[in-house]
Length: 582
Image (tube, rainbow, N blue to C red; front, side, top):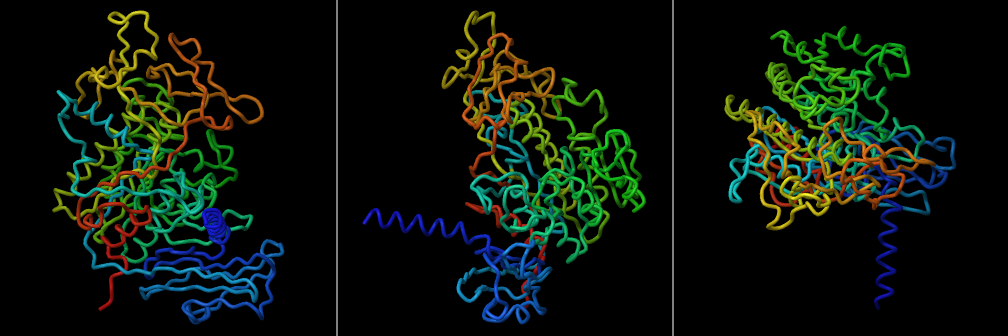
């Protein structure tokens, strides 16, 4: 019995994978009543229209959606047909069964269309620590609060919240997500494939014609007239911020994402990434055309800030705000405040995430209908990829400062704001102990043997933090030992990188990478052979659940074990985006 059962299970699993991308939205999709989406059926071959039958709860597409679908005989000029209907909606909650047949092959999927309760929150602020792992959170607590005899001397704002849940992060095509489809699940309530946002990745060649699903940025503005803000310290075109509004299965399409931002016109848009707003030929531009989107946004009524001084000088009556503070990613706290590495010398006056948040709240709160705001501390992920743990932890402290700021702001208004804090995906980082680098008391001992575990870990000796929670040094005698479970070949120095952000690898031959020779002669450095394919130049994401904490009206829906698509539902319910009809 064992072999037949195993074979049957394997067949079922392979069949699921083969058919899952035939009908869009996919099987078991949860769809907010009244939200817009594209309906598509892909057939494996050319279909005779006379034999085609597609129904939604027994009705044809015209009866179900109010208009006829387009039949494409040969999609992309290939021997494959498709049925397509753009921007449809289902307003009645319930279970919908979609059946598609070409006369010989058939496929059936089911959707759940849901409504919401009445509106509970005036505003929603979604904080995303990109790649934020539990190790980052604990390290941020240890550095910013301190610990004595095993008890922390304070709590992080991101942890001191009444509601908590574990959130599963798998995408439609893999158990491991990237930032695009992970953030897209939060922004749309739909699963997506790696690199895709706001769309179901179909089989066509174009990355811009895939079946779209409506984003929270669009819904908030269209249905309630809310202001919309997007704030990050990465490039503003990067996956997490872009997922709040954009539609593409190619997250690297920065030029097109900027164009989609301009079409959507969020009230606040702040981060790095100025290079893709500037016309080709302008100093520092990365655009492939002559479009000047800084000028376009300015002509559309936006106040434009390029540094912290200009951001602080924005007029009190500012209604629209575009902040572009670096050509690429902005710099993290450790470099801006202490080390002056990275791009700080070229861009010395970059605002902190708390300054960006303050400006965003000032603009968005002018809308009497309320607002939706996404705030990302995005460099946590960049540093975790690069095995640069100290920089990642300092940017986690910055995220916590921004959350505390938002909570204080909401409390002063009577707690009318739902605040959610979570990671989009995990990194396989672990806090395993401390590293004792005191050469005077423990001389001539290899650094590997200086890793203290269990009782030998003791407690780190970082100096007392400043008012913002940042110790003035990271190169202390006894510091935290945070290691990654996913590794490229690299030289482990066991020390913080005090000159510039870490670069663990360098290019080798044939598209592969090797350990960066820059660190080879650092005293005590050890060559670590990786456990990843040689084509990977950095650590990678992992598939563990992430932590979600929440406070404010509507946060009671946050508890237990959740799927990442349910985060969208928490937001939709708090805002009452589809109130149940009596």
